[in-house]
Length: 445
Image (cartoon, rainbow, N blue to C red; front, side, top):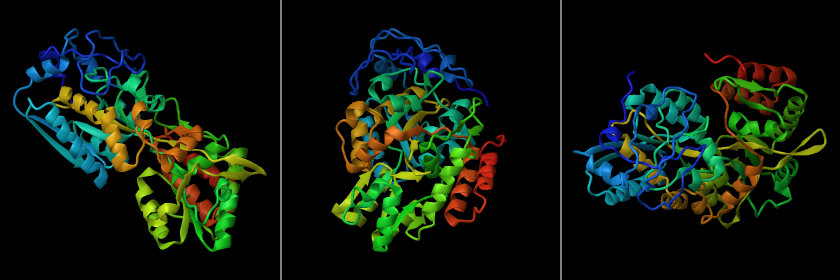
């Protein structure tokens, strides 16, 4: 597949303020402004081919956006992929309309497509050149997108510095080998406990043992998606077990079948032996909450509206409970997740794609997205202006959360392990752990 050079950057002698994740330039406000005239070199990543490195980006102009406009002829066609959820689709349409108004000298044809962040990488890698110019994706997909040469590195900025404007965790999630490859959008792609505070006290939700006992006493249910490795991970990580990418960035290393992991698995199996505990997926959990049967569930910000409808003013959120491991209370861990905006390195209008990506991730846009979707902004200033029970719980859980970095072989074995612990079919728990680790660490094809 032949690389398409960033021609517009070369022919227009477009000036930019370079801002690598390893050394951010001076920041500006998130409103549209002229970037600094001075530029700083960005170190190249030791990864796959790098489209940005192939373009001789001119420096020194006082107005890069004016140069970009002057170099633009005809209609600028762009495609933006974002979540299929109505709240995201409507908000992105509003932001795109604002973008068009801001740069009204240019004729834009911007199409908004519906693509889940969780599967965005898979759709892009089917045909990178035919994929969207700008897309929202989950941060754990960054490595593969970079290795495929699908992401335009954020070596050029127009209106603000994404590195300085966003939280360190989000910037780290958007970076590889010291280079920033995406624009942070949200910092709330994690999970916590949602519950009905009219039926459960703060003491009840402080530990899994207390929660299960309270649900048993009332004939109610508490839920967790044990068959999903994304959630199951938190039990093992909380106890200090390790499961992450190997140095090759593709395969996994995992020690869940050690002595500590065995104790964790036995603890999970013991919790699941109660009839008050159900293993249930997100959609079914929301339905059961509305029926009044499910009074506590581990989920994320995306589910808050449905749980709000179910619990009303009694909706409460808290960090994940502790659980008992060999007589000691262990704080359950979790994955910390971020949503990022990427620019396709093969975009025919990469300059405008980068400016659009900046626009939909600036402070004002992140505030609007947060208000409409209940998600937490990655932008530092925006995050300080939004508060909710869900975001407070997520913030409390963040101290026990890890950046999600596991290879593809993690998911099926981890999910199978969790299901077997819930079902009680793992009579030999050590063997179940050994089998799971063997699958998780198997060489990727």
